[in-house]
Image 1: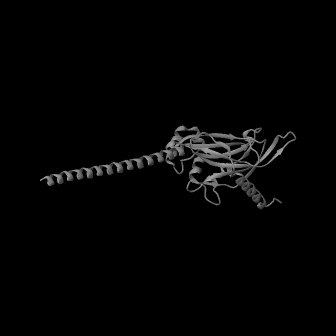
Image 2: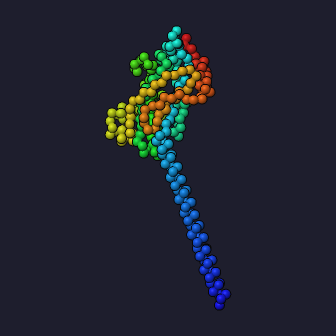
Image 3: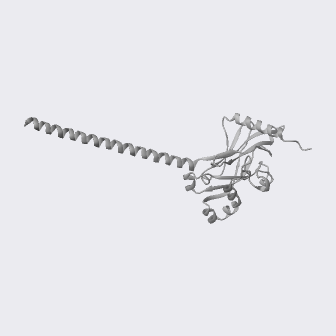
Length: 254
């Protein structure tokens, strides 16, 4: 009888330990699952923040040469300008390099920008997930904007709408450009197109030889960022070389 009772007690103890072990496993599995879910949510939230606060390079420039007077003042600056268009998967694609000369050493970049509603930016929408930029002109400190050099292509169409390397122009970008003034002047129409803000923007900066400068479009629509890049001497030399090669291949006018 005593052995029987011991056996019963032992079985109860074993059953309790097994049940407790199962409960601990369930607790561990539940806790791990919750940690994985929280980590996923944290990553998604960080991605949304990155998209809302991120920016996209829309153009870059370097100084090709400068003319300096006897008082060491810069009379004029010749710039190499390169825009970026949007590839078929939303990736940036470099456009051909152009050369412009402005008085002084502080180029002003005039553009029209379109910022879409935050929901599109948060989702990383392929077409509306980033601020669009249509560059119009570049001019110096001593010039009125309409005296500057045009950054538009034939028929006053932005270069990013003309296609690149024989590719057809982006239909969405073309539609946005064709409606740009209605988007700027008619808030209800802009909202119907998912546009939050459409407006003109100007960015300017004093430039020096040997540096690379980028024009960024913040995804939050806060104008344009004209910044000096650090440690990009190789890219500067590559742009200068590319521009020289393009000029040497261009047939001279008889």
